Image (cartoon, rainbow, N blue to C red; front, side, top):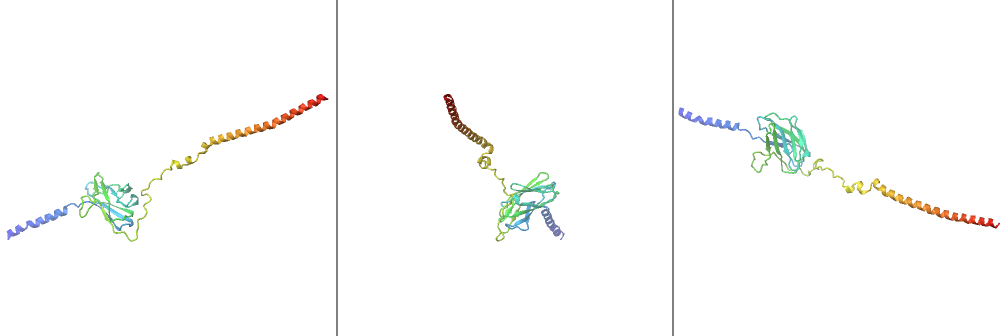
Length: 245
């Protein structure tokens, strides 16, 4: 009886040891995205991102998110974040960061999206940065039933509600500066400036004045010549009469 009891004791010990080892295995860190209204074309949707801490010596200082097609950085508004963190828009997404969170603490922040695109799912590639410079890239896209080692957070969407249509893009989305006026349309090229017209006008006026003065001289000569001729004839006749008498 003793031998059978002694021989059966190793099995329970091995089972207990296995359970302890499994429970002690570290959980796989990742980034998650959730929403209370995950529906295509839904407006003013809040998205909550949670980046799990995977360092036992440094805290998360920054999380950069690459937006999927159909969402512009101008459509994002920060709603909730760790103390001191701020949002900065980029060319293809946004960054939320600030003072490092406590070591071992997940970084959780919330943003509002103006409108979700018409899609089945949205992939938000995310990059974490820690206070010691370590970077974790959660950018691999899951396919089928396979789960990559560093999967990007994915938000599955319901079909859009009947009759819902995409709204106009944000005013700042894809804004480009107004083109500079073409040289052919500027006032300086379509009409001559007063200073440019002055020489021609002055020249024309000078020609007109010269013609006027010439006319006056000719008229004066025409008047003086007959008068002089008449005066000479009168003087000659008077002298002739005097000599006869």
